[in-house]
Amino acid sequence: MATDDLQQYLNSLGDRYPKLGQALEQAAKALKDSGTPITDQLLQGLINYNRDFANFQQTLQNRGQTTALAARSLVELQQLYQKITPVTDEGAIPQQVLSLLEQILGLTHSEQKDFAPLQQAHKQAQQLKQQISQIDLKSDPRVKALLTGEHPLNILLNLVNRGDQLNDEQWAKSAEILENAFGKSLGVAISRGKIVSQSGGSTTTQPPLNVTAVERPTANPDIIILEEPTTTTAPSDVIIVPSVEINPKPLTIDGQNIVFGNTAIVGQPTGKAEVKPGSVGLRVRVHLQGLGDRDFGGGEYAGTKGQGRRLEAFQMAINPPVPGLDIQYMAHIAQVGDSPTASNGQMVGEPGTNRQIEGFAIKLAGPEAPKYDVFYNAHIQNKGDVPVCSNGQYCGTRGQSLRVEGIKVWVEPKK
Image: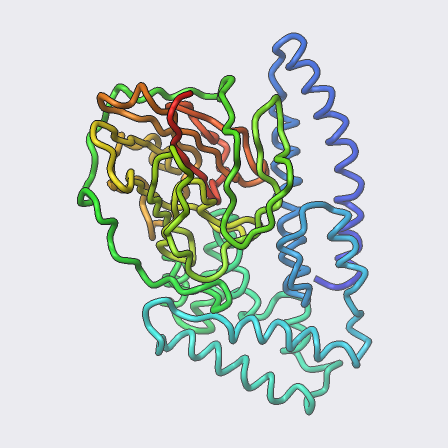
């Protein structure tokens, strides 16, 4: 996309969001006052805006603005756009191209260090990197393709970073470009979450939870599934991922604690959370797109934010065990629907199948269950941190194609 086209695209987004915001405000009032549903036209307009916003983010990323994917507003994207140097400015082009090439060279296969198709992409990127000071920046088609996001290396980076946000037609077109450039197996590896950024941490599979063996659970009709959370008792303290800055006072919505601003996980969590006196210890394992299995403790945020990574599966167990107390959970899986109820270390979800978890519910069971409460919330695509749910309430969405990117779960004795 040329610079002039970028400006027109940005102007279009700028023209649309005030009108959408006003229409959404009116629709929200009508919904609140009289229960009037939001029109299909408005919903489609919001979906289109979110799609075009994401496309513009990726375009800026391809043009060297490496923080574009973390931008949350059009104002932030406008600021990043202003920093893009026109193609005629020869002095800054190498830096933009080098930034893109470094991102390509930072990709790795989580299981095969010598994965030939990726090595071929690395070879192209390395050759361009070495030749950048010698080639004609104005006329070289490779530089132009990189700067406009049309080079196969851009396509590779786009599929790794935002492949789950592409529709089937966009994915198929991108996969065809990759196949022509590097072979079919590279696209397959990306679709299975095997190609990851080295800066994003290893995807090495962790040892199994030291609890009940993982198996396909049977349905349990006792778990309560609600479409929207009702009033809950929020915890007195909110525990955030270790090494993340903690706000002195948690923000609230309707009296419920919400954690904002948690940074994405970096490296390998220990999975050994400090358990507060009187609380119940948990061990939570999540499978994240491009990162694989990660272990966390009760009260820790298990996932990422701002990276566009879907939560594909999870399992949890009370650790150390409490006699007479079990934890049960289910999930709503894209293209599958509600899973059967699992418990005590069984897995819900389908890792490696490109299917995201869109919501979940957790409850306690056993003779000791009436003495405890389980609390949980999630970070959801386009919604952020949602209110705290408890004891079987459904947390998330259905039928909106919005991924869960992380969860936080903790158990406390009733007061």
